[in-house]
Image (tube, rainbow, N blue to C red; front, side, top):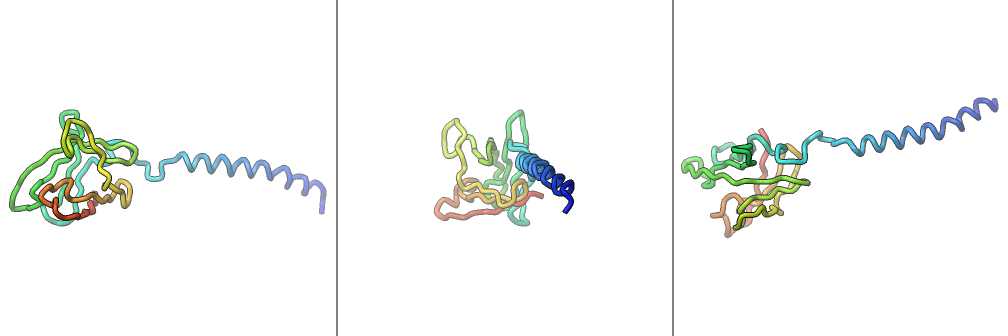
Length: 141
Protein backbone atom coordinates (compact mmCIF):
# COMPACT_ATOMS: atom_id res chain seq x y z
CA UNK A 1 0.00 0.00 0.00
CA UNK A 2 1.22 3.45 -0.83
CA UNK A 3 2.18 5.38 2.36
CA UNK A 4 0.60 8.57 0.94
CA UNK A 5 -2.82 6.89 0.64
CA UNK A 6 -2.53 5.51 4.16
CA UNK A 7 -1.52 8.95 5.49
CA UNK A 8 -4.52 10.64 3.78
CA UNK A 9 -6.91 8.10 5.33
CA UNK A 10 -5.57 8.81 8.81
CA UNK A 11 -5.89 12.57 8.17
CA UNK A 12 -9.54 12.11 7.11
CA UNK A 13 -10.59 10.30 10.31
CA UNK A 14 -10.56 13.43 12.52
CA UNK A 15 -12.39 15.40 9.80
CA UNK A 16 -15.11 12.75 9.49
CA UNK A 17 -15.41 12.58 13.28
CA UNK A 18 -15.74 16.37 13.48
CA UNK A 19 -18.42 16.40 10.75
CA UNK A 20 -20.38 13.69 12.59
CA UNK A 21 -20.29 15.69 15.83
CA UNK A 22 -21.40 18.91 14.10
CA UNK A 23 -24.20 17.03 12.30
CA UNK A 24 -25.40 15.44 15.54
CA UNK A 25 -25.46 18.76 17.37
CA UNK A 26 -27.33 20.43 14.51
CA UNK A 27 -29.96 17.67 14.35
CA UNK A 28 -30.45 17.60 18.12
CA UNK A 29 -31.07 21.37 18.21
CA UNK A 30 -33.68 21.26 15.43
CA UNK A 31 -37.32 21.04 16.43
CA UNK A 32 -38.33 17.94 14.54
CA UNK A 33 -41.90 19.17 14.06
CA UNK A 34 -40.93 22.83 13.74
CA UNK A 35 -43.75 23.63 16.18
CA UNK A 36 -43.79 26.43 18.73
CA UNK A 37 -43.74 25.58 22.43
CA UNK A 38 -46.37 28.13 23.36
CA UNK A 39 -50.11 28.61 23.18
CA UNK A 40 -50.18 28.97 19.40
CA UNK A 41 -49.44 25.26 18.92
CA UNK A 42 -53.07 24.65 19.89
CA UNK A 43 -54.69 27.43 17.82
CA UNK A 44 -57.38 26.06 15.53
CA UNK A 45 -60.22 23.57 15.62
CA UNK A 46 -59.95 20.15 17.21
CA UNK A 47 -62.56 17.36 17.02
CA UNK A 48 -63.08 14.07 18.78
CA UNK A 49 -65.92 12.94 16.56
CA UNK A 50 -68.23 14.21 13.87
CA UNK A 51 -70.87 16.01 15.95
CA UNK A 52 -71.09 19.69 16.81
CA UNK A 53 -70.58 19.00 20.51
CA UNK A 54 -67.29 17.26 19.77
CA UNK A 55 -65.36 20.42 18.86
CA UNK A 56 -62.78 22.48 20.75
CA UNK A 57 -61.56 25.76 19.29
CA UNK A 58 -58.35 27.32 20.59
CA UNK A 59 -58.10 31.05 19.81
CA UNK A 60 -56.57 34.31 20.93
CA UNK A 61 -59.45 36.50 22.15
CA UNK A 62 -59.05 39.94 23.71
CA UNK A 63 -55.36 39.22 24.24
CA UNK A 64 -56.03 35.93 26.07
CA UNK A 65 -55.65 32.34 24.92
CA UNK A 66 -59.06 30.71 25.11
CA UNK A 67 -60.69 27.33 24.55
CA UNK A 68 -64.21 27.67 23.13
CA UNK A 69 -66.54 24.67 23.24
CA UNK A 70 -70.05 23.40 23.97
CA UNK A 71 -69.97 22.35 27.64
CA UNK A 72 -73.10 20.22 27.25
CA UNK A 73 -71.25 17.95 24.77
CA UNK A 74 -74.63 17.67 23.05
CA UNK A 75 -75.20 19.20 19.60
CA UNK A 76 -78.90 19.71 20.40
CA UNK A 77 -78.26 21.71 23.58
CA UNK A 78 -75.88 24.62 23.15
CA UNK A 79 -74.05 25.60 26.36
CA UNK A 80 -71.13 27.76 25.20
CA UNK A 81 -68.12 27.78 27.45
CA UNK A 82 -64.78 29.56 27.39
CA UNK A 83 -61.71 28.73 29.45
CA UNK A 84 -58.45 30.63 29.47
CA UNK A 85 -55.47 28.37 28.93
CA UNK A 86 -51.70 28.38 28.95
CA UNK A 87 -49.33 26.00 27.20
CA UNK A 88 -45.66 25.83 28.17
CA UNK A 89 -43.07 23.07 27.94
CA UNK A 90 -45.61 20.58 26.60
CA UNK A 91 -48.02 21.17 29.50
CA UNK A 92 -51.57 22.50 29.22
CA UNK A 93 -52.92 24.57 32.12
CA UNK A 94 -56.41 25.99 32.60
CA UNK A 95 -57.24 29.14 34.51
CA UNK A 96 -59.74 28.76 37.31
CA UNK A 97 -59.75 24.98 37.16
CA UNK A 98 -60.73 23.41 39.43
CA UNK A 99 -61.24 26.72 41.25
CA UNK A 100 -59.38 29.93 41.95
CA UNK A 101 -57.77 32.64 39.89
CA UNK A 102 -54.56 30.80 38.93
CA UNK A 103 -53.63 28.40 36.14
CA UNK A 104 -53.66 24.72 37.11
CA UNK A 105 -51.76 22.08 35.13
CA UNK A 106 -53.87 19.44 33.41
CA UNK A 107 -52.03 16.19 34.08
CA UNK A 108 -54.22 14.14 31.74
CA UNK A 109 -53.20 16.24 28.69
CA UNK A 110 -50.88 14.06 26.59
CA UNK A 111 -49.80 14.48 23.01
CA UNK A 112 -50.33 11.42 20.83
CA UNK A 113 -48.85 13.27 17.85
CA UNK A 114 -47.45 16.68 18.78
CA UNK A 115 -49.42 19.47 17.12
CA UNK A 116 -51.94 17.05 15.57
CA UNK A 117 -53.56 14.83 18.21
CA UNK A 118 -53.88 14.80 22.00
CA UNK A 119 -55.69 12.99 24.82
CA UNK A 120 -57.44 14.73 27.71
CA UNK A 121 -59.70 13.53 30.50
CA UNK A 122 -63.33 14.37 29.69
CA UNK A 123 -64.25 15.52 33.20
CA UNK A 124 -62.03 18.57 32.77
CA UNK A 125 -64.21 19.91 29.98
CA UNK A 126 -67.52 18.27 30.87
CA UNK A 127 -68.05 18.33 34.65
CA UNK A 128 -71.22 16.22 34.44
CA UNK A 129 -68.95 13.26 33.63
CA UNK A 130 -67.45 13.48 37.13
CA UNK A 131 -68.60 10.00 38.07
CA UNK A 132 -66.72 8.33 35.24
CA UNK A 133 -63.23 8.57 33.87
CA UNK A 134 -63.39 9.13 30.14
CA UNK A 135 -60.39 10.06 28.05
CA UNK A 136 -61.04 11.82 24.75
CA UNK A 137 -58.70 12.00 21.80
CA UNK A 138 -58.86 15.25 19.83
CA UNK A 139 -57.48 15.68 16.32
CA UNK A 140 -56.69 18.98 14.65
CA UNK A 141 -58.64 19.74 11.49
